Length: 396
Image (cartoon, rainbow, N blue to C red; front, side):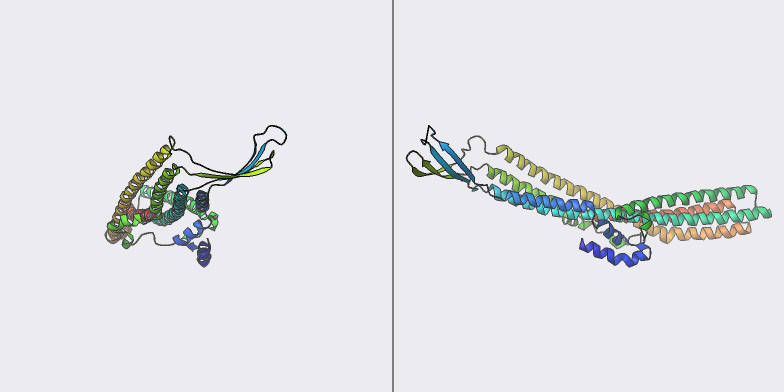
């Protein structure tokens, strides 16, 4: 908790300027998050179970009257009995419970990674939404300028009224696109603000690079090793070990444990005292805890199979996400380096041609549409690459 408070305090000067980064958003969201508090309580539950599992059995005190007939003709008996935990079942149960504590701590770490990934995903979605607003506003401004130009030309008699009407219609469509993009951005900001625990009006503007660097994509050869090193997988392995140790505890619980008894007997009639000693032990003729052992063994085997299945499923998903990120980055590089510069040239040529009457309004609108679609496609490729890497980082 102290670490997150330090991060938040360190970010305050940036917030004062109205922007914050993905790392600062993570610090804001994780500080005091109820899910993390719940994970801490779950770990405390496991610690309590471990404490209870290691406690020895309590002694028993007996007091009674025997051979009661009449008057003082009876015997008084006071005794103590103690079961000796020689089977090792309690020690094995405590070892299993301690593995449960370790597993709960790893699960808390995995939950923290998942929450951080959720914050980063929503942060970058909001960042991408801001870029969509910027592109939509740029397209709206272009359409507004085109509509103004066509009205002037129509008033001068250089363009038909139909072209001016279509330019106005295109301007209206671009305004609607910009308004829709703005509403989407505000919705994402509200969700991000709730996750960060602040009001939407108090949330700083998202800042940072949307497009990931190519070196952020991990090599395919390291995916399995990194998955095996995650807190999530470590927790699964610990739960599997816990189940195996619980099987051993159940097996040992079937061993009979002796009970020692010692007591003082007083004969009131004669006024004499005597000591009683005894040993009791259950005969394991029928119940040797066989059913519990079989169930515990099956549970351990089930967890082992589920863990291997989960790891293989995560590996397939990690390979898929890596491929998506690499493909999106490659497409973005081509759009940025080859496609968009050519569309910029086409738009510039169409604008000049329209001014001198060498092109129609529809040719200019088509050129700008293609340019805007290419820029939006670049943005979507960058956003897809970032989303894939955020999910991949959560897995790894």
